[in-house]
Amino acid sequence: MLEQIVNIERMEEAVDIFGSFDQNMRILEQALGVTVVNRGDQLKISGEAEQVMQGVRAVESLLTLSARGESINEQNVRYLVELVKSGNEDKFCEMAKDVLCITAKGKPVKAKTVGQKQYIEAIQKSTITLGVGPAGTGKTYLAVAAAVAAFRAKQVNRIILTRPAVEAGERLGFLPGDLQSKVDPYLRPLYDALFEMLGADNYAKYLERGNIEVAPLAYMRGRTLDDSFIILDEAQNTSKEQMKMFLTRLGFGSKIVITGDITQIDLPTDKASGLKEAMRVLYGIEDISICRLTESDVVRHVIVQKIIKAYEEDENRHKTDKKSMRR
Image (cartoon, rainbow, N blue to C red; front, side, top):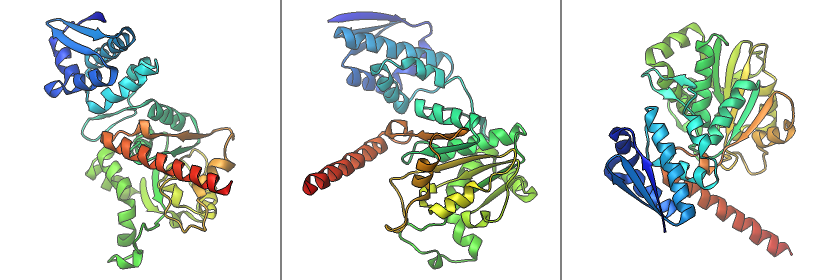
């Protein structure tokens, strides 16, 4: 058994890192197999030597985060533990430094995982970025935040958000109203992200001026989009022809972000996904980045990560079984 002491400068920091009813510290203790005891201005960490050193690094990272005024919750404690186990805890504190955008309510938007940080950096440096990953990894939200940041900095004159109107079990014709009313439900996640970044009043103002456009992918045909930040969401549901059409809309001074989840394709089984084709065709081309986010980048409830992992494992088992049957 080994014991290590970590000194605390302010008691408020101890309150922050322990969390409500010591929830954060219980997660850390269980994940690393250590015991953490608060002794006034000190924390005593005990357990096996390797686990204790990991615990010390985790606690010191949490204290650094608290000193910067960052919120500490179950999700980022669990993520920190994974980084500590792989010796990458320094990346955890680095992520908290850079603010991508400020929402209408004054909340800073930052990367919460290493994968998200790489995704943001790719968007900022590349003309075209493909963000591919499961639900909850922040693909759309961060893309909209980057678009608003570029618009506020006058790097672009317009934000254009689009997605294919492909149904997941329902038909557009069953929905009431005109065409715009029918496609609005498919564009709702884009509206929600824009409302949060800009506020409802600013959104309405920019929409009226033509600085913001939210439309189905079909509306993009025949256009050249200059000085625009263009986001194609749910791109796994595009056909090869639609994807090529969309990519060739790019004009001067514009930037494109394409997001999608290749495990949730709603196209007919005999139709290839334009996103999967684009990942293959565009690989290695200069100024085009392909970012693959994983279940470790999910920033929703921790059980979402487990659900995604369970489905991936089940799919891999089926693939293995099919290979065995062929033999």
